[in-house]
Image (cartoon, rainbow, N blue to C red; front, side, top):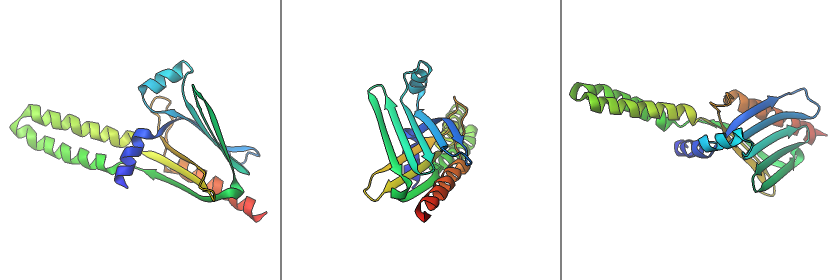
Length: 184
């Protein structure tokens, strides 16, 4: 699973906005995200970004994907859900490499300061990658194999943090709404 978290960090969407209102009579969760990367962020400043929006209502899930070339909307009634999964992935391999390279850097400093410094820089880069590539997963599928799958990660620029609590809250809201729909 570690390789999946490393790959997901590259393709994960960056969260721009999160709104959760469990008492709302309409939209209870809204997550707005964009593609990751500096170019995508610069394009969002001028309003040319690809926006991904995920919403949870009392009776349905909605996903909207917009880009310069068009817009795709997906609506799944909660009664049609077959499985829903949430999770949070951390690229632990980056953390392990950071620690190993840091130890190697300390050893290398006794032989060559330049080589030790290079190992220290690479260790720091791996530590930053570990921090930046933590990803939230929300997967919703139906009996017909259709679904909504999102991988989100924190945004340093927009200042929106993505953590286990957010994924758990979204999961709990979907679960409560699903149970209310199926018991009626």
